[in-house]
Amino acid sequence: MNDNDFTNFEENGAEKHEQESEDLIKGRPRRKKRRPWAFPLGVFMLILSLIGLITIISSLVGFIREKTDGSEEIAYYNSYLTWIVANDPDSFDDISKANKTQLLDISILTLLYDELNTRQYELIEEGLAVPAKDVQEYFQKLFGTELEIEHKTVSGLGYTFSYDPNNDMYYIPLTGVTPPFTPRVVKVDKTRETVVITVGYIGTDKLSVLPDGSVSGAQPDKYMKITLRKSGGEYRVYSIQAANPLETGS
Image: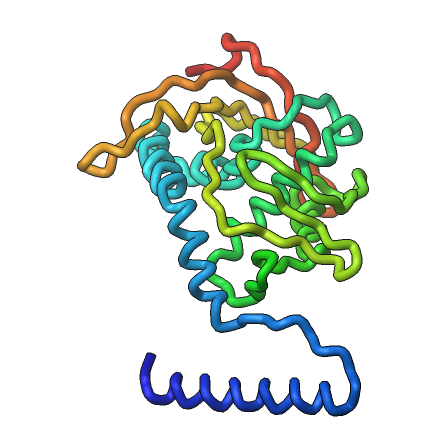
């Protein structure tokens, strides 16, 4: 911390103390103590908890590029499907039949993965405070508006994302996430209105990054077809179905 940062820290602390004293004098209830200075530390801890998985995913994307003539499209869909495949949701023939709780979980994890480098969210005693409206934005970005989101506490993969209906907030614990699968896209079929992605689900317990940065070879445990359908000018997940091994082309 340099001298300017230290001075700003002291000035902010003094202003906060002055405001709290004024609130008490006027009889207003004292607000819950927050620690905005702790957020960078919280993000650092969150990054550390995910770094192993991200390293494997990044290396795997590099491996896939080599095996698919450097296809940027394949790399894009591998990134896009990261947390969908990681959560291994139940299959469904159309989005109206999907498990909403699983989709909510995927939306929160996708948001966190995208927002690691921001200072937008505050770290409080309950965890990282994420507004429900932001979760809803990601839900609709991934799955469209046909299926209405149901805000609630969700658990999975060794964590719990607690929902506070009074403040319309999710509280995210700083804990490690070890999903069972990571994606390997093997085929993409496009029409004007749909994109059908055939993707292998590779068990993360089978993957390891070698000293040269490459990924050890691992065969998918299963293959799924994930269909994106155009909605509102953008493609959203419409169905997740089992793929016939003969259709994988691998």
